[in-house]
Image (cartoon, rainbow, N blue to C red; front, side, top):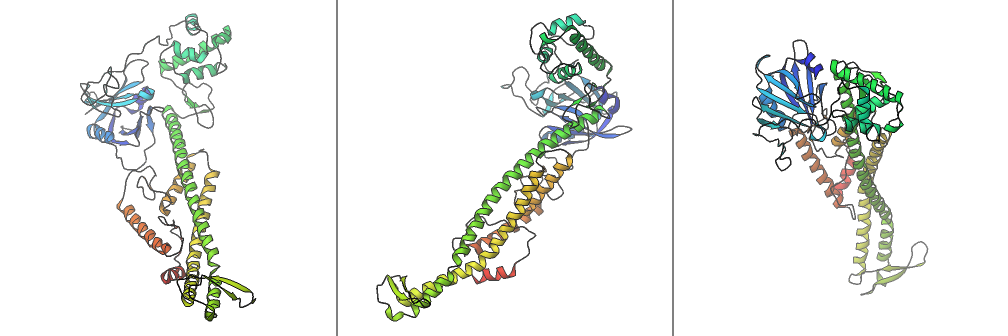
Length: 500
């Protein structure tokens, strides 16, 4: 908070934007710069820091609209801790610097209980990111119109520079156990992340026990403990990365693999990396599962069309049978269910099955109809099978590209995956659950008129193809086959379909 006070107070609130359910951005302008203050109440990633500009997508959240209405144009004049060692801030807004605050924006960074609450100058709650009913918490409900109550005071001893080595060591080692757990339990305000960094900086094992430490180990650990408290007291931090993959960070300069420019940049890059990583996993899983479903259906259609082509190969046999029957009408007798005739080529006896309710000519005509029907089916099915195979090849290529980039490493991986998602939605393989258009992020929540018109045209084309398929015997009945938009029109296929 001290870094924010030094560089971003006072600042005018120009815009409020909410990216998702848990993350808010406030555009601030000072005399020298302009930036975005990111505030998140995510259960696992609650934070406040200066960040890169948010994506340009419509904001559909009510909470941000309420904040924009109340805070727009006002000045952010103060950022104060509610109490020492408390992870709760009071952001005060007024017409001008040094004037009494009109609004308080309380940012409570408390794990799964994190919240952001807007109150009047008299601490009456106007809105909150997460409402807490009296049934959920009788001691501290967070509801519109209720008075704002500060978080419960921290209990237990707090770290202090005045504490001597022996008292510090005896407090942690009072109950034998895991060193990190005992450090967290012995002092309020000490997180497991801080304890882990202090233990690592003292060259101790992560799972070290209090009974394993020698006197020298305790002295080294206490020295790092004191250095940490000096950093907090003087607000001097050394930001950096714990590894090259940016999976962890430090602001104490402990076990640092790579330095960072400043604390704000460090926090922004770390959480943006985590957000992109989670978004990559979500999109990758969604696309992969959809491809599996589509390919299974397309392979089934390809098998059905292949079977129809194999059946159409028997068309010539039906014609020859009909010719044989027509050439031997004199051997037919009423009520016959079969007739034995000599084959044209081999002169061998051939038994033909007949419909006893029809005469010889009618039986022959039925065979000629089957011959014509199978011939028409072959003409219609071949282009359909070719299109299905084209789709299978295309989707298998997409599937292979996903296998090659299955783990998020850099932002370009997420952008590539988003481009794949846009392409699949444009092709009609994926349903657009957010209504985005080309060039927008798939997280967009805006639905356009253009998207609706395209959907209507797509449905009309599917209906037309369904009617064409319905003329083919035993063709798959469903919502129609997906057809890549870039495929050229097949005049010969359409003419054949019309003849059906």
